[in-house]
Image 1: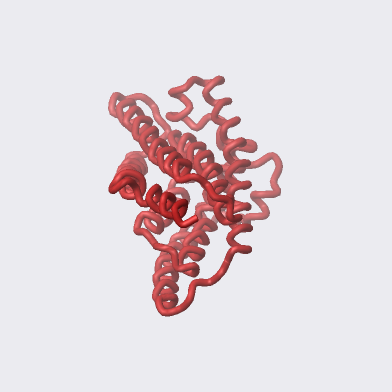
Image 2: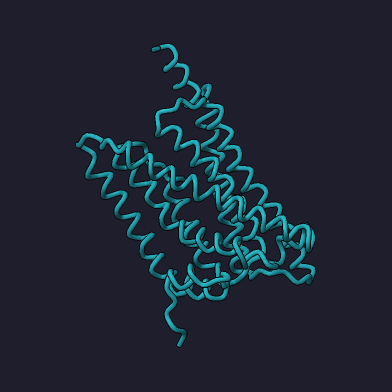
Length: 272
């Protein structure tokens, strides 16, 4: 029987111990799963509850919410960038995504563990959407639920390609939440910036596909890779679904009929 490992124990143990973090995530993954199920029930119940009510003005809390996620994601991007560059320069480019190396130790390891936990916290994004009566897309909640469960379930298995996935997600989120923060503070951000952020999101999934294809090829030819068949296919199918859904969102928002976001921006300029 493995002793219970608390958040504080992992967070305050110096230097950071990846093995301790794995025990913590393994012990909390089922709780996280049921939270994700409750999340789906709560957001749709809240959406129904708000149907005949006025949207809440949550400007202050939204400012704080986007600010902390922007800061956290930026710090995570910096930490994992350093960790990934260390892997590339010390072991080689290909090795950086087929073996975990030292990435899960030290500061990059600490932020990877926090990254997994933050996927539960990010459910709060959706509460702001439904309480403010903004459109709730399937893409939004599906992406939140699947990414969170994938992160928790695969953490203990030391998947080499998760190194790149973590780094890319942190980096894209640092820009995305920075954009959300500016928007919530009332800064008028051009639609082309939102378009470029969506492009970056799709690009991270495309890069992941290339990495997964190479990992799959190496595994098929007998080369040693830090992966498991089950989680490899889980990740690949998840990433395919993300490309399809985000690609459709990109088309609807920025291409079809001139793009909803660009049309809304033009309309706003005319009104002023």
